[in-house]
Length: 282
Length: 326
Image (cartoon, rainbow over all chains, first blue to last red):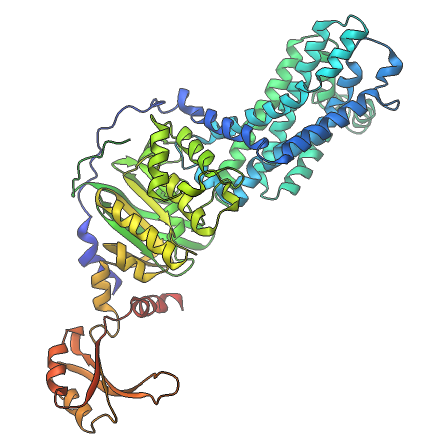
């Protein structure tokens, strides 16, 4: 029955080749290259606003400021008041540890929510590339974290009132914070692309971020050296985010440290985009 | 935007060739072919899991096919090819949207991502078209199902695309909302190629000029709704109800006619309290319309009602798909 049906009626549209219609050159027409990240601005704008669309974003910022403030002045951690130095080191020292929890919380919804609610299908059938949306979301998350960092300005003000801080030092420290946020955000986004469940994405991302901090501890490096030899020890040490972060917070804009952050972030972003390409339809 | 392309009936807008997709061992879509021209409204009919949604995902470029091709207005659909997406409006299954955004904010985002030249005008147009004016400032998650579906339609229409792919556009809507969406699609049909999936066969009949019945990833039937109707079991059967008993010899006399395939007494369900009415069901051969012949034969009896049945697409649908589903 089916063959006959198709033979008799399907012919309404069969045969003739499709005729392409002349169309006006659309923006970003050159297929790849410049258009590789097509649509990132629109995605960035939507995503950044969405952090402030619910009270969650504000609550998050308040918690971040409370936690960073506590770590900075606490006698057990930053000891800002006891040190009596015009330096933001008490703040910077604990930022990577704080970020290892905070940044995955910012990253977890970025893809998991899109996939769970099905909006990923809507998003990726708009004239935007997967890379463009990935970049847009990354920059939106990073900007949101940037807002959080910017809101630590009272600490800067306080330091300036107490003495004359080394401003290059301060700026390099903040740069280190932004780069660490970017690196962890790239890690968190990969896990958000991997799991539809935000909580799972969060836990996996925290575990990964903490691992990259733990490899920087001398104890870890010694243990690895004992078990696997000096080569492994140096390899593990080279993966340590903390070492490179400390280079920057000491006020040293070392190319090696900057390059490390750049490569680390790009590799995780590219990996995340590859993962999303596989998981978007599942 | 704005400028409506001249209607060329012959223009093929969607061309699907040997399209296949497997999920493990399951053949979700199994080498399907069809074309849709400007002015066509094509319905995908089929049971759940027939491959309707998978096929639509491939047509819109969201899902990469294992084999086969889709061309939209002559351009190959491919995950890396984004220009072709400017020609397509897509309503995914369940009309997903960002719940925390307002209707207007959401449409602004879609207009932004589509880089529309005059987003304000485009948004005003679709808000009016889908009658979303009253809720434009509301967040999407607070809207009823009917409004959410219309928001999904609005984003699909915002760039006035040539090709519309709509996955169950009226699913879960109340009859009024259904009629509204159907009227809207009917008004758009003229100069677009529309593919929609539905469970509601009457809907296919109302707004589509072609219907594909899919089952297990294959096209079982490709016909106009009228042709489907003609093939529906019981098409053009006549029901004759009598006051009192069915005349004793009448059934046999009608059955003896050359054009009659079957004639038998049936009991009509009656209103509560009254006894069931006696009736004859006359099924003509080859589903020809034999109403006048039947009327002629029953003229001298005490007939209370005569009804001509068009047949039900549901019955055809069940008949066509049951062999495959088993």
